[in-house]
Amino acid sequence: MMKISIRPVTLRRVIETLDLSIKERYVDPSKLSNRLRTTRRRAQEILLEIERMRFLEATTDKKFTPNKIASDFIDAFNQEKWEKIHDILLNNYVFYRVFVNVLQRNLSHSGFTKSDLLKILVNEPQLNFNLTTIDVLCDWAERLGVVQRNLYTNRYYLVNNSVDFTEFISFLQATYEELNIKPRPGLKQKYVEIAKLREHMCERLKIKRETFDFLLTDIFKKSYGKIELCGAPITSIAKKSPTSLKKVKKGLKDSILSPQFICLKEGRGIEINGKEYHYVAIFEPVR
Image (cartoon, rainbow, N blue to C red; front, side):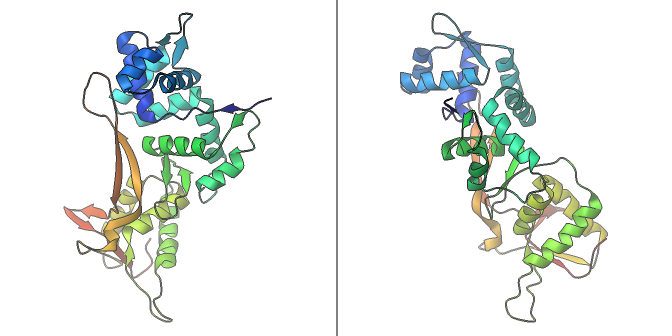
């Protein structure tokens, strides 16, 4: 049996197409190509893939009408409920569901590069996964915030919503020691970049970056004298990450909705009482 292949569609095109179909009550290749300024062939590909997502239903006169799932999707976008969009895709789009399930089954794994994911997913019996498919799905999941990517290793992982505080402290100490590079034997660096510490901690514990910031700030306030934070010069490499963090946010109101895609290159520190810190040193074990 021939495997099903994905027709690559960006999250932006899905949102624009669904919003247009809801406002016009239907959409067809001609209407979509005119609105998106693309070819009719490309418009047809977009419509067929969104139909596969179960958001549109084809009619006998070659038109596509939106259903309740499409309305729920756009409502979630308008309210910037990214996890709800993730849930809708998970329940209705087979490529997305299989992709996420691989990450879910391997939560104990340190994380996966795109090549790692392809090696696993290429064995799917009914779906054709290639690098283009992996690129599309990784981009969607990262922008929705349910999957994060270590900005230093480009490894992807599914995030949890909680972490044991004792486990966090244990991994904080261990990860700090690993990143505390010795320039020469017997000499330690002492100060570690918070941005790099965050990326490695989040990957190991499968937690959101905001969770790391909250917990590190809490530990710092409770461990006076044991932990020291410091800022960085404007030109410091601690303020730059090697790859860009991808996000999505609701765009301005127009004739049809269109999201804004954001790529942040700057490596963030943490902010406490209005001051931003980019380095951390741990002098004594914290509890």
